[in-house]
Length: 266
Image (cartoon, rainbow, N blue to C red):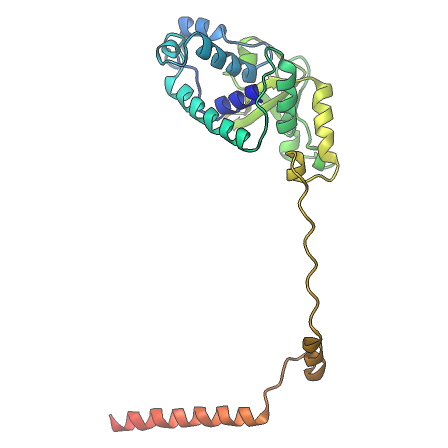
C-alpha cells in the first residue's frame, strides 16, 4: 500500500519533468538527469524512483528537484495528495506496508485497478490495440474498442525504446493520433487474471473489497382499507358526493357575482 499511495499521488499531479529546451530542441543536461530515474517497466515505477530519491537524497527540500530538472510545484502537490491518501487508508484500517524493490505487487495492484485500460502490441512496432473490456467483449466492431494507440512521446518506454507486449495506461490524450500517457508494462497472465473478475456479476463495492450492498426492501403491501376503497369506487378514482359538488358550484357562482358587483361600482 505504501508504494501504491505514492504512485497514485504522483499520477494525480502535473508533469514533473522540467526542461529548458524550446520546442523541437533537446536539453541534454536535463535528459541525462531524467534518465537516472527511468525504470525499464515504465512510468509508474519511474515516478516511484523519483519519490524515493527525493526522500533519500533531497530530504523533501526544494533545492534537490531543481538540480534534477524536476518541477518543485508538482512534487509539492504530490506530497500533499499522498498525505491525504494515507489518511484515508488509515481511516479505513488498511495496514500500510511496503513491497520494497519488488515490482510484482505494484504490477498486480495496477492491473487490479486499471485492467480496463489495457492494450496489446500489434506487430513489432510501438503500436497498440485497446483490449476489449470483458463486460462488452462481443461489441468490438468499430469505436474505441478497436482503435490503435501509441505510447506518448514523454513516456519512459519511448525514451528507452521499449515496446512490451502488454501495457496498462492511465489516460488517453487525443491529438493527431491517440496517445497513451503513464504506461506500465505488465505480465499477460496477471492481466488476464484480473480481467476475468469482471466477467462475473460483481458490484463496484465488492471489487473494492467491501461487503455487497443489501438487497432493497420489498415495497409494503397496500392496506386492506385502501383495497376496499379501490374496490368500492372502481379504477377511475373516488367520486365526489353530489351534495359537495353542489356546494362548490354555488360558492363559485357567489364569488363571481361579488366580483361583477365590485366592477360596476367602480
